[in-house]
Every structure is written in structure tokens, then in C-alpha cells.
Image (cartoon, rainbow, N blue to C red; front, side, top):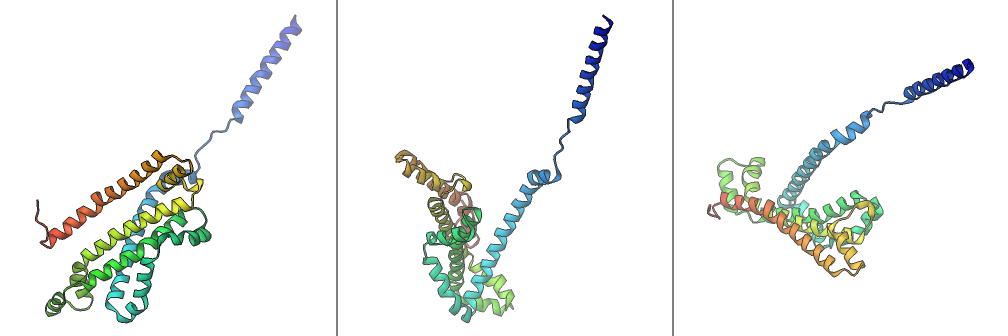
Length: 245
């Protein structure tokens, strides 16, 4: 009887020790610093960087347009190239972009930029060409020469043309994105409207095809109504070309 009690006690002690060992073996998982940075801090930084990159791109295009419009040898050298790039279908950039970067977001961004940049630059050049010479003479009379004349006379007067170039650049970039998604379809890129359109064609799903077309049209109209139309109205009102309602 005593031996049985002793054996039970030993079994209980062994079970208790095993439980304590299991508790000691449990490792409390802490979120590593890298994971916290990637999930919490990285998205806002990327958003700010994207805004700054877009702003820097617009400024760079503005400088390029000013150089092409105001410097003769630059216009002779770069002007025909910009015109040729604008007439080149943006879908032609998809194959080289895939070979350069593979099927990833960098390929998409490259195709979008190559489709939009020539239109924006040419829009600014056209806007500068349409600045009345009287404005420039009046500016020189008031002392606005050199960079002051460019900043206070040329840039404000060419703003409608630059805005038209931005609208055209948006249209070209939107078409470029749809064409790239249709041609370079990949699960790594996610499901976009272009891929939705292509999937509807492959599955002979006519309602799905028209749904994708309607969604593409709705996005284009929404961007125009929410972004470009208010800016265009503001520019026209500032020049007295549109009465305030």
C-alpha cells in the first residue's frame, strides 16, 4: 500500500515537473522592430514619398517644357522627340518594360510615365507658345526680366496649356495602365480593371466585359469631375473667363 502511494506521488511530481518545463519552454513572442516598422511606419512614409515624387516630376516636366519652349537649340533637339513620343502608342512600351523589370509594379509605373510625360511637356510648350507677346513686353517694362519674367509672366500665362497637358497626360496614363494590365496579365500584379476586362474576354463573359468597360469609364469621369474640373474652373475664374455662379 505504501509503495503504491509512493509511486502515485512520484507520478504526480513527474507530471508537475513536466508541466513546469512546458511553461518554461513557452516562448513569449514579441513583434520584432522590423515588423513594426514595415506595418506601422512604412505606409505613411511611402505615401509622403509618393506625393513628393509626383510633385518633383511635375516640376521637372515644367522645367523641361520651359527649356524646350524658350531655348531654340533645346527645342530643335528635343522638340521632335517629344512630338514623336506623344504620337507613339503607349502600349508599345509594355514589351520592353516587361523585359527590363519583369511582371511587377515597376513595369506598370514605367509604362504609365512613358505614356504621360510627353503629353504633359508638350502641353506646357503649347501654353508658353500661346502667351501673348504683349504680356512679355509689359513685364519687361515693369522690370520682370530673366527668371522674374518667367516666374511672374510666362508661368501664370501658360497655366491653362499646362493644365490641358496634365489632363491629356492623365488620359494617356490611364490608357497605358489598362493596356499594360491586358497584355502583361499576372497574379503578382493583383486584379485590376484591365485584367478584369481580359478575364471576361477569356471566359466569354459579355456582361463582365461591359462591367469592366463601365468601371473604367466611371473612374475616368470621376477623376475629371473631382480633380481637373475644379482646377480648370479656378484658373478660368482667375482670368475673368468664367463668371462665379
